[in-house]
Image 1 (cartoon, helix red, strand yellow):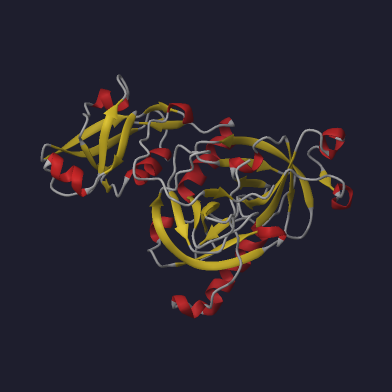
Image 2: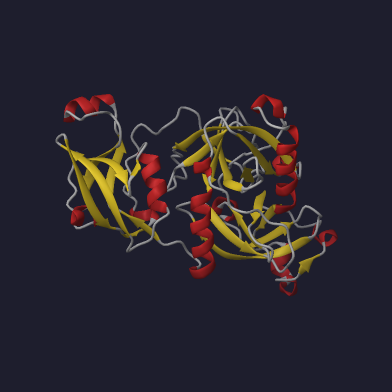
Length: 366
């Protein structure tokens, strides 16, 4: 399984962010009961030998001999026990236990998993649970305060504070690459056990699921990365309905624009996303896009970089129509395109300029 270490270690003084101190405390109070511990077991675990426990409440005192293969976090999205975590937390395991903040323990039923976005949905047989509402990271500015809430290093129900450090950040993992690869970056401390934990705004709304860190040591070294709530919403809806996420794409290989490419193409600026190549008979090809076209906007939203484009496409579905604004030989054009099905194996995203010298680590403990 991936080793994504996201931890919440120190709650920085709220006045550093110009906030009423009670604001962050209120946000933490909302989030804590909705964040759970996720324990993943192999098939030879206690649960496989006792199928009668399936879908029933588990007595924690009876689990002492079972050793989980992975320990991480999860977030309750509904009062009836729907839990979102990272897909890498469940990799290679077939039994999952969810432990609530009040120590009640349940055997979870996996609803579905999506490696492309690194999200998985679980269901436990419980009702009346605290849960987190989805927020919108687009409403936050860089520098706004955020809280990370999870279970790092066997320290359950831990809260740390930081700021939103960046949007649309790519942190390429050469071992376990995801198709989407667009994260919220924060400096809220994160270590092993924080995979699947909550990143919340000052109102206590879920803006991301913590998934990874960059670290030379395996422990938190400054920045953590969370899957944004727009992707969580789509994955939640489609995993619940279909048990899988339907991905759509333009069938392009693309990369960030830069000053060198802008000079080569005599472009008006270095903004946008450059089309490096197209899949023949793919969505972009059918729409009339060409190599060296510069994608400037998608549905009138200016594109910041390649990760931004991936994130926007990841929130669409096959068959959706989008309007692209492109620059071709110095002329801006509007190009309608119909998205076609895409999956992780077919992803054609150029990874240029997205590697980092520090290793990317998943934050589940195993």
